[in-house]
Length: 273
Ligand code: SF4
Ligand code: FES
Image 1 (tube, helix red, strand yellow):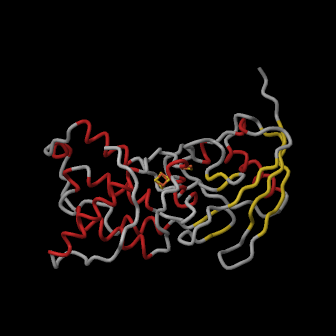
Image 2 (tube, protein in one colour):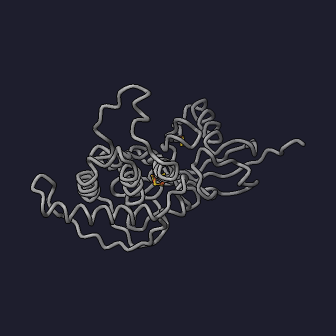
Image 3 (cartoon, rainbow, N blue to C red):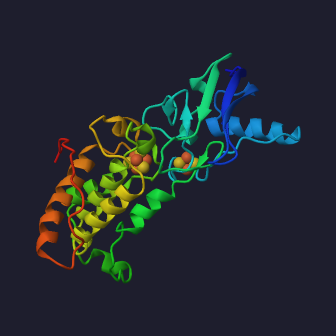
C-alpha cells in the first residue's frame, strides 16, 4: 500500500546564542513520508533551506537510535514529543497528519544554556558524572571481570539504572529543572554493584554537591521525570539516592576525610525494592 505524502507547518524556535533574543520562525514542510523520523523530516527541511541560501535549523543528533541522548527538544509542549518514553530520533512522522502545525523549541533549564536554536549545552550532566560517576579500579583483562561474582538480580537492577543515556529530558520536564532522576540513576547503578562500594560514600556526597551548585532545582514529587524518561528509569532511583545520601552524611560526621554535611534533602518518594 502506498503511503500518502503530507505537508505540515513547522514553528521553530530560532535563537543565535544564549544572550540573543529568540523568536519562532514558520516553515512549510512538504512531501513528508509517514515512515520518516522527525529528524529526517528536519534533514529534508534543512537541505531545502541550504539550497535556497537560507539559514538551516540547528539541531543536534548522533546515533539516531535512542542511545546517545543528544537529540532532545520539545515538540508541541512535550519533551521528546508525543510518544511515551521515546527520544526525538525514535519519533516517526506517522504521528502527524496533513495540515498539522507543529511547534518545536529547545529544552529550557537554567543549567542547560542554549547554544543555538534547538541545541543546548548538557555539559552540566557531565560535570555531575565527573564528580563521582565512576569507579577507580584496575579493571585488568577480560577474565578479571568475573572475579567478583554479581548475582543476576543485582546485575539486572544495576543495568536498569545504567541505561540512562544522559538526555536531560528529566530536567526539561521537571517544573524545578531537577537533575535528580539522572543523578539518582548514576548513583544507584554504582551503589548496587560491589565494584562501586569503595567510593560509595564519597561519590554520593560529591555528586549531589556538584548537582546543587550547577543550577538544578530540587525534587518536589511531580513524577514528570519518570513520565518522559526514554529509558523508563523509575523515580525510586531518587529514593535510593536519598538513602545513600543520608547514610553518607552520618558517616561524614565521623570521618574527617569525607566531604562535610552540606545539603538537606526534602524528597520523600517511595522505593520499589
Ligand atoms: S534519567 Fe532518563 S530522562 Fe533523565 S537523563 Fe537519564 S535517560 Fe534521560
Ligand atoms: S540521536 Fe542519539 S538518542 Fe537521539
